[in-house]
Image (cartoon, rainbow, N blue to C red; front, side, top):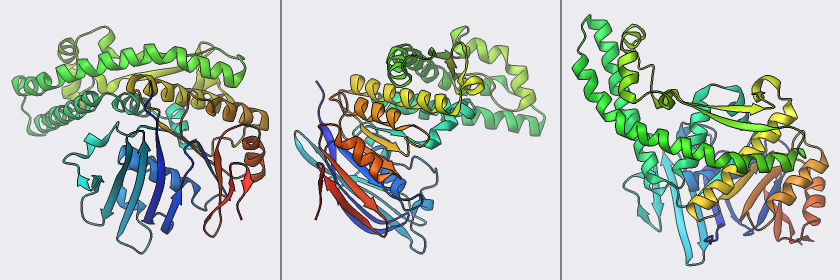
Length: 378
């Protein structure tokens, strides 16, 4: 049984291109239309902040402060069957980020992860296909950490020990000495969290494959066969074996060449890499299906429907494909949805065909509601 949750209100101060805005949302579909560059994506990124404590697009928080100012504040009110909760994220230049829930600051910001799950679908996702294995590990980490808090702790612990082992390898190379026992101290700290991370990823990939295939079949009308394949050195060797087998290689290269930080996720279509044979449209369909599978997986595991953020997803899709996707996400499996698009008439036509509550916002000089539940706002 899902515990319904949605974002009721959003307030921004000096966040990206917004000086001050306050918006109330529909619990189902909210669509922002306007030209490129007016700030549609920034609304979705603010919601991502409230859910996962960080931007979807940049790793440096201070970049999101409005030009000419020294702070930003994001406030949101989440509503569920028990009542409402107020979330605040604030950053002042030169100071650490502050995150509060109902006025109480978190001791560790990571404690917030999973409380308000979110799934973003964006053109930036193409890096999952085109870039290196780090992007695909990030994808797996993002999914699992939203319902498994211990997994996030294991990632943090493993990376801390990995950083220390790499530092030792560099120091030994610079100083012309070597102490295997000192390396083993850090290896011991990597083994238990590493094995748990491997086990979680293996289960995740196995369980998400049928969901992913289902969504891709719906979007593509079963024109191609798709698959995911988890690649890890731990499939054939223990962490101990990997460290012993690669110690000389590690000494020469001055970093740790084996472990779960080398894992990858093969993205396949018709038996080949989607990166090598997939057209632009096929790759986009692949990513949308992967993200919708991620949504359903988090829902089932955590018992809470994530907020779905769809940023400029419909570019290069024909109107039939747009209608298919909107129809798909508007059923009861999905909760609150935020969509950005440049085509007001197209979105209004598609939304008017489905029997569901929605709000349509126009962004130009400011933000204004132009349609509520299919009726023009005066």
